[in-house]
Amino acid sequence: IIHKSGMLKAATAANRKFLERFKRRQGLDDPFSEPLTESPGFCVLAEGLAEAQRLSGGERIRFAPETLPNIQAAMERETSDQVERLSTRLISLATISNISPLLGLLGTVWGIMLAFLDIKRFGSTSIQVVAPGIAEALVTTIAGLVVAIPAAMAYNAFTSRIRSMALQMDNLASEFLGELRIHSIKR
Image (cartoon, rainbow, N blue to C red; front, top):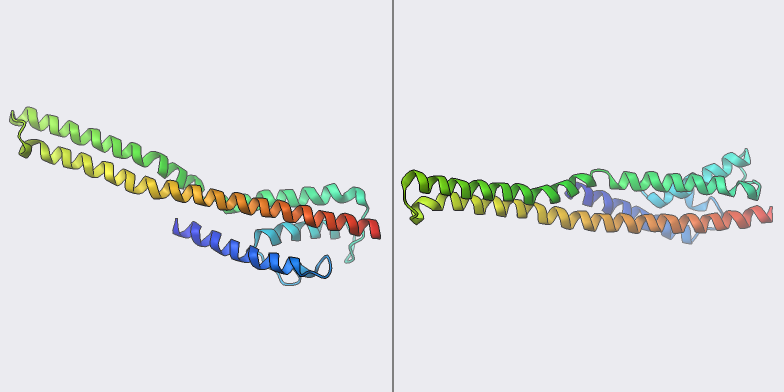
């Protein structure tokens, strides 16, 4: 949770910095003069710009409007790659949040089963006989919940943040593609 939180915080800050630079741009390649590779938005648009330059066959961006779908496809691929990068190890949180309560329940059943075995062994239902098994049952239940609740909350929060960044990347790509479309018409 701590690692993923730091990673997403860094990506969000870099994205914010890139968006500010992108809004102040003077030309098509202005926001790309200083690489911000930890920004998913930068990576998506840089991939689009690289594809546009590749299709232009040179340094200056000159391409036919019919090549815009190629540029869009390159940005969509990079968006998918960035979402995949941001989502790494989230499956671990999902697994932990789903399995921990079940392990707690298993411990609960085990503790209660021990309490019944102690009743049989000692022939008594006094609190001294059943308390150890019941205590174990409660501890494992609590342990399962203590692990599952933060994992589920973190998973949901991280998934929401990644979804938000994916939407930002899509919006940036659309805006950049619109600029490229205008640029290709003006040439």
